[in-house]
Length: 153
Image 1 (tube, rainbow, N blue to C red):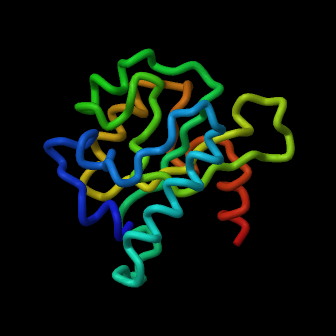
Image 2: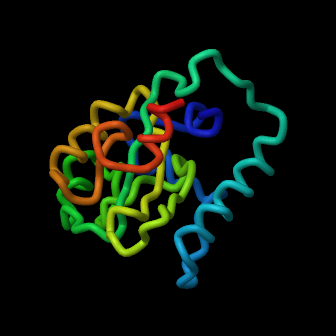
């Protein structure tokens, strides 16, 4: 939240949250490896300059991207001024976690969690709507073990 809040520009959602400093390596490594790279770089740059807030999501929402499910084939990208890429992947600055549930046979058992800043939840919602039952969904509105665990807590 600290990283995205400082960089988000609602008029350029895709560009403002794909910072050069955090760009993942494009060497065919796993999404999990790419996320670890992004998280490590973000923490190294932020250092101790971030603060916790009373609102655990800072007014934003958690989005799930299922890379193995059918994408909108660029429709989410077009609907959101580039917030999502052609595969419906959210910008790497927003990446929080990569989850692989115990049942890795189902394509929806692997997903990336991204934090969407409050100023972009409406536009991200357009991408989720265009993707339909495909690769995008909000935490709590799509099946996920993470959502089940959070509701039980």
